[in-house]
Length: 324
Image (tube, rainbow, N blue to C red; front, side, top):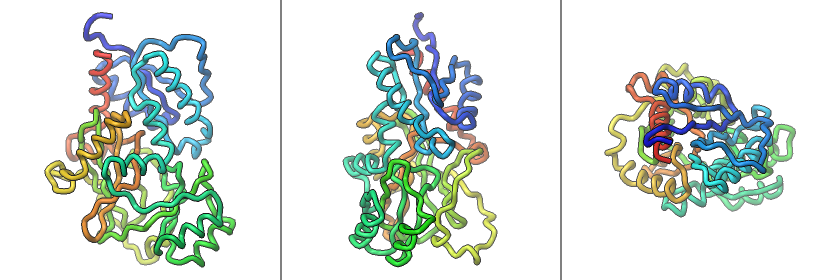
């Protein structure tokens, strides 16, 4: 291969809607790519993988689209690629973190980043026992999550007991429910920080006053959190933008404290593209509760600030494909 000639970029994913914006960005700058749609894909491990750059965009919420075993299939594929010395963006360690919040929280703590107190349980009795070790209010959520799966707010044990022993209980796809401190916040918003090539791209302020629909993708449809988080009957129509890019976030005191630690985590684990979501308590302490290795971007928000996440990813893939 000639110097600076781009290798083909292979896109590993299970959601065609989420892949399309990246494909458009790759086409715009002339990056050759191929789609490896991972749903029911055959993997012939007795042959050598094609030469190229492989970008893993597998999602923890794949099972909600009927692709229950696709993450496990992708994990095996990544191991096959890596054993054959292929360059993988967001490889085996990244997907391990994507599929388990327990793994995420351990990595965050190792990087010196605060996380809510969390206890993992595998049955109803364990969930109730865990709640007694924390102070109400508490939140339950799925260990293998995405889309706000299993996120419920409880103010007392009676309501929690009715839920876990009732017909509305939602088990996590991996059987692990997390019981977590509910972080009281002065204002109804969370912050989502986007990284490309382990570099800060921008931060989003995400309004949560009408529910936690946190996925910024234009086509993303996410279930709301438990209605107990807010008094739905009294909510006025929200006329504010749901997502806003935070100007000058990079020079803020919060960014100076947590961004270097997030970058250190990405370098340690082997993550090149990701987002981190955090919430501020009343003392302005940042608690990170989710890392999205398969991140998406909102076109309307970016147009207001002339920034494109998928263009940044495409340019990054272009540079790596020339030198890998």
